[in-house]
Structure formats: structure tokens, C-alpha cells
Length: 191
Image (cartoon, rainbow, N blue to C red):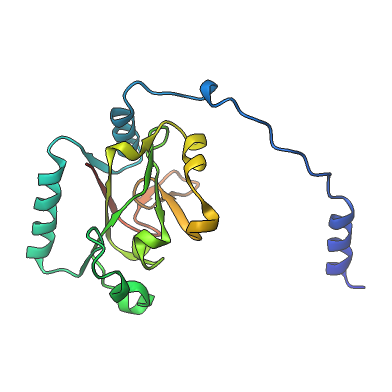
């Protein structure tokens, strides 16, 4: 038996017994009096930009502006051409400038938004674009992650992701880099 098998066997023999997850009284979890305001505050704290008042018109202006620039954009807000983008690979999406997606859920606690594979059509889209634009219905904002996970059916949705802010990383020297592993900017329109 090699060293690998010895280590794996030792780990398998020393696994603790499974422990049941505790029941959590959700009435004791964090609750906000103004979900929308807290959500917007947390989106902006994570480096994104959020729009609420007059957001429909601002979204239309945003779409028109990006279209007028003539850059490669994908708009999945109307769900008309999702099949057209489904099978594109990273090379074909390399020049994607802006991607418009709809989120199914927003979390006021941390500004995160749940986007399922059905909503993004192609798993690459929210990560390969330079600028990510997410539209979220105000009624779909919950207080905290406990409430969010109660609404997500992973078995039905398969792949999904919580996105909070543009891509960022900071090294040991505390240098913050925006857009290191994904979108350089995030705009959120709360409708």
C-alpha cells in the first residue's frame, strides 16, 4: 500500500459521526426594516452600483448606451434568445463586454444575488464579461442567507451562483484588484 492509500485509509477511519444540523429559529435571525435600502447599501459596499428610483428608465438608458457603443453585449432580460448563447465557449465569448441577466433572489444582509443556470443560459456569462448588469425585482429581496436558502431548490435548478459585487482580490500586501477573475463592474437595477 502506498502513502496515498495509507493517508486516505487513516482519514476514512477517523471520520467523526454525522451530526444533525441544528434547527434555527428564523425569527431570531437578522431582519431589516428597509430591505431595499440595506440591499443597495451592501451592493455598493461590495463595489457595485445599485439603482432603485427610476430604475426602469435608467436600465433602458444603460441598454441604449451600451448598444450605441457597438460593443459585444448579451441581453438575457427578455429570455428570447437564450439558446443562441447556451453552447458558446470561452473563446467565442472572449470579447463579451456587457452581459444583462436577471437574478431570482437578492439578499439584503450581504448584497448577494442568486442567478440560476436557467437565468444565465451559459455558465460562463457572468464571469467572462467585462461588465455585468443584473436586474432584480424588489419583491425578491430577502433579509438573510437563511431565508435565501429556503427559497432555492438546488435539485430543480442544478447550477446556480450567488454574486456580490464585481470580481475582486487582494494579495498579502493589501492591493485590491477589481476584475481579476471576472467582471470589472457590476450594476444592479432593482425594479
